[in-house]
Image (cartoon, rainbow, N blue to C red; front, side, top):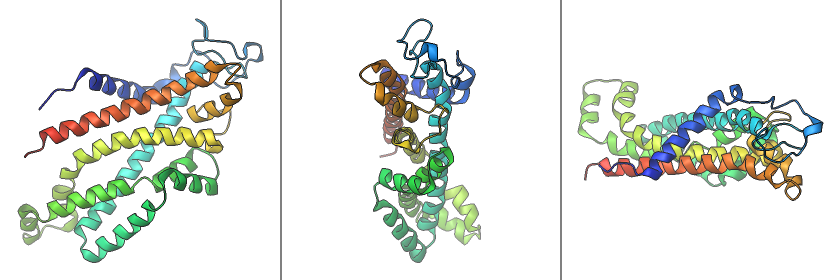
Length: 270
């Protein structure tokens, strides 16, 4: 089993820091991220305001820190809800027999027929903007990959001797699912969840940029980019610096997911 290289270790560290900022970011802000200060509007980065100030004079660095909880926190919830839903549906499809499998997989195929972002836009458009609406929209279209992964691995595990022995011994189906079918799929699901977290952060920021994000003055990374687009020429720092956390977070979680995938593939028996 090969060790993680320096880039992969850095990706894990950055990923952990992003999750930590989502938890405690609002407690670290040097300035109030909501209260405007018209006198200080559109000031460039300085020792006083590391990322400068926005069009209302609010400290951009403070808003980035405070916005991590919404942008990353929502992404974590989207991933958890999608993973649990996909796990349940995949287990039911893989162990429920031909009729249940066919029905659930056709449902999964129907959801796959629509591009994930387009479907999320449609759901968010019907529900309106806001954190809960975005959470629901992305969770509705995020479970299918997990369901297919779990279903495929469950079909292989369900045919094994130890599962057949458990059935013959009278073990209840729920206990078989928890003890024999779920553990083998968890490592692969963790890899998928890490990559999904990167996509969820990008999707939440994208929906925020398109006007479906949190209502002002609540800080959120995509909404900050939406507000900054008008000032891209006169104050480029205002648009560039709030975009860096999105780029760094997505890159870190993708690299961490790739590292975990490679580690699992290396550790798998021949």
